[in-house]
Amino acid sequence: MTRRRPCLALGLMSGTSLDGIDAALLRTDGESVIEPGPALTVPYRGALREQMRALIDDASPDERTVAAIADALTRAHADAVAALLNRAGRTAEDIAVIGFHGHTIAHRPEEGWSRQIGDGAWLAAETGIDVIDDFRARDLAAGGQGAPLASLYHAARCCGLPRPLAVLNIGGVANVTYVGDGPRPALLAFDTGPGNALIDDWVRKHSGAAMDEDGALAARGTVSDAVLERLLGAAYFRQIPPKSLDRGDFDPAPVATLSPEDGAATLAAFTAAAAARAARHFPAPARRWLVCGGGRRNPVIMAALQRELGVPVAPVEAVGWSGDALEAEAFAYLAVRALARLPLTVPGTTGCSRPVTGGTLHPAASGRRRTAPNNLGTR
Image 1 (cartoon, rainbow, N blue to C red):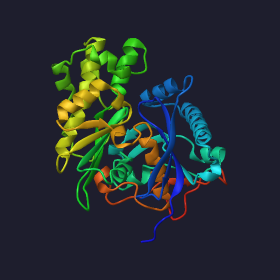
Image 2: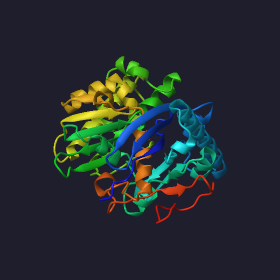
Image 3: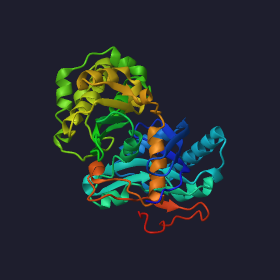
Image 4: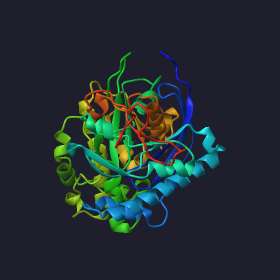
């Protein structure tokens, strides 16, 4: 097998928590050579976060509104690229490719579609760097869920760690990657249930704050076992993986009668209990769970995970990873894999019928969107 030369890629991630844009540099060959570089998070400025929240909540948004928000979102990503290059002391010429996820405004895999907003062609022209976006379309066309997408990167990072191992990402929605043991380890990935989205929305409604910082509100509350049981009765938990979720797929109505503190405590317990139920689908028990995403900063969720799982649970920083940058790094990794026409998803991660590559290439030189050579992917 011909060894590919590692290159420096930049990954961008705007997740369902709506807290901002993660940007990260990664040197990789798209397979095993992985050297994380500098990273940063740029919070959304002004009204963009609320505009995006309203767009996600709107079942039939006006397309002119969608276009305006997509334009503002893309400009924010261009600013994040510039800020990261400045921090790292790099120029556009140093970067081989940008992996641009955009922002998901609706995800309906049962209907065969998922919609992300963001203009990859404009981003390429603005930054002077080739951009790959549209990571989900070919997976969906092959019968996959189109999510989660970071699993192959999680598996690559797990090389050398004791396994079986579970990597849990708690963003707005939570997802898990299970990496088995042995020379051909089992790889399984799916959304476990809610992450921070329901908690964030609850706190925003009752206090105006963006999140339950450090789990302070939940720590003052008591879990309602009756409400938690109702939440866990959702049909999603009876589905067999692979499976994935949209941000608004869970109805928080059962929590409505609780106090702000008890509601936060119950929703934190819901996130942890849903993740623990995911372990029922593993081929063998995970020896350890590593947690990334904003949820790892909520000590109430982390303590509940430890109780529910009964095995060591730790932030990914325990093994030297960055929990804030990991998902952005994943899109840098996927962009390099897309350039090499390597699979971005496999049956165990999304349910696609076969290993699937994908992505749409936007060359910086043209500033115009075109499909990459060899049918890298199309919208």
